[in-house]
Length: 213
Image (cartoon, rainbow, N blue to C red; front, side):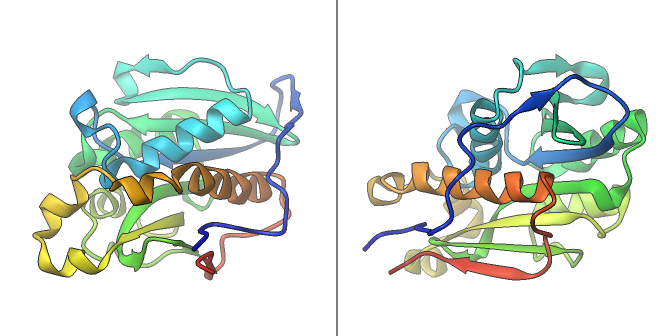
């Protein structure tokens, strides 16, 4: 069984431009800070945004204590793109998102949150704009601070055993060895979605991309 296979190529070489007066987009990866959370399902937002930053040749991450996050930015095409990873822990992600949003005057419609989704099977990625939190504490915090009209890239983490395990324990567990075989493909797929969005070739309207064949 192969996961996360697409016919469209992933953007491998992304041309960067000098910063100027461009439309600004903020992409947020959700997760918990600390080595004990590395490789856990709840941190897949961190991991995919890290991958996108590396692939797209963003500069080093900087800790912005006043904005409660790690941040890097660059220009892609005609967009100025800010990538952030909140340092607040998951349940207070909205503090960081709202701080960056206010500081850089970024409209909520130009914010994209990349996060794990327990209600979606591992092997699927869904996109949409708006909606409720579906019990995700990070999204709940963000909605409380800035409303719900932001884009979401929802990465499925559900397995059959998730129904038999406490959800808090399940999301904080590391990916299984079988799942880990597909994380690189998952990272590439999310990077492709983000690249398509930034360059304007797609929107984040409701869509399910299923890659289990």
